Image: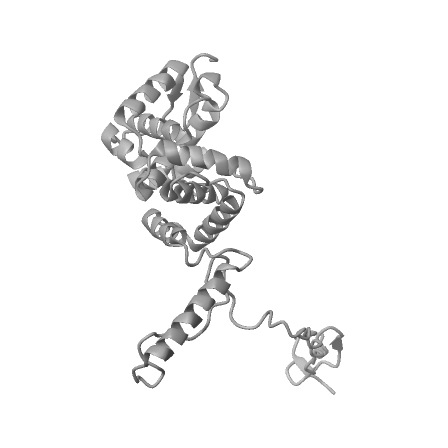
Length: 308
């Protein structure tokens, strides 16, 4: 059979696509749809009768083993008022329900005031839900190990939230967490040290690059200033005189110097407000950086006068 377009009798068979085409013009003469066999159905594990795996997923720290209906002490399901005997029975059922929930293996954090404080603090700091869940887990673990014994609730909640922020590399300072929770910075810091030493999971420090991205975004700095600060940070890590400075204070001072050098002037008050450091600390840190010889260049490089 000749090709209807070029009248050629040469054919090419494609075994992968199951097509027969013309060797001269490429017209497909015969096409067969390849039907793939359906995948085997997944194996469904049978329930052992314990009720596990039934119902929607509940994140850690949420309400568990709680009755779906609300026990009212005034009226029944039809809206009729209850007599004193039925009110006493419902009150007893509510106490039993709360007692059984409190005896759960993961603790009664859902009814504890700590969970409400964690949610309020996370909303003030703008933290994602995964940080809230990690804060509840850290708080529960530290509480079960007795690390919060003798300490106030605001300091304990602030330490748990600050530890969760450091685990997920969220740039939040200890002063911001203390101010948002309404506790002293020294109390939250001492409680965090206990949590850091007593919990099983490692709590790393927040890198300077995370603070750099946050401060630069709030100050509306250009990418040229960011690259200059990054180059200065790489040089500052090798200087032993700048090793004891706080990360957010060092980044704030470098941002101020780099912005002045690149013509994007920001006042000390603006940089201090964004970085939550005082103007005195910012001024002294800038003097230490200038004394160390870190001079930003317009091309985005940083040189050390002591080594050049």
